[in-house]
Image 1 (cartoon, helix red, strand yellow):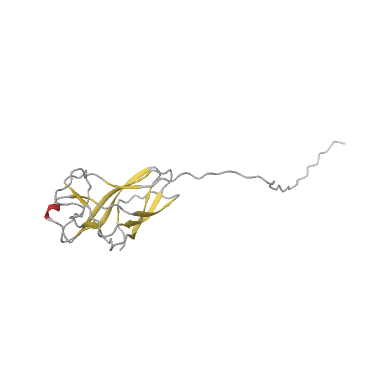
Image 2 (cartoon, rainbow, N blue to C red):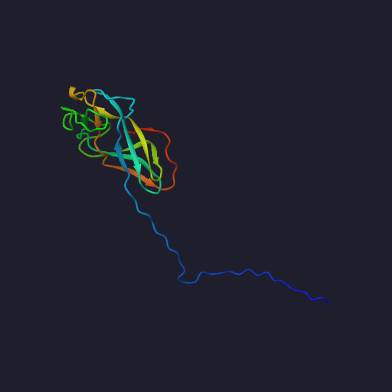
Length: 179
């Protein structure tokens, strides 16, 4: 008689012993920056009583994408400084932060205000993005003649509303915000 071998199939349930674990660590977060760019190619230029475009570069130094959904504007009592060159290096005589009457559209009263972007802007990991904020600068009727043919350094945002995490970088270069 020939020998035979039998196989048995058994399902074993394996438990997890006490003290079993793993370790993870979160990365650091660095603030994004929003800066003026030299030689902006704004389509809508400012004039007294009107609005114009603001061109800025958003830089994300983080190892993950950041999506901006809103900006925090300073009060409407803080004005842009005027410069005679697009590099914002030479101040324009007579067109200063106290006289220009140029500020952010929709900035209100004596308190900062938050304004939602019409479309969120996602800046990729470790990259930058140039955006044109359409008609988001305003010039008062009282702006002095010294501000003709002038480049403006807009008042700094007081903050942004942003989230981090997996997202696709924005490809459009224009945006605005709602009032």
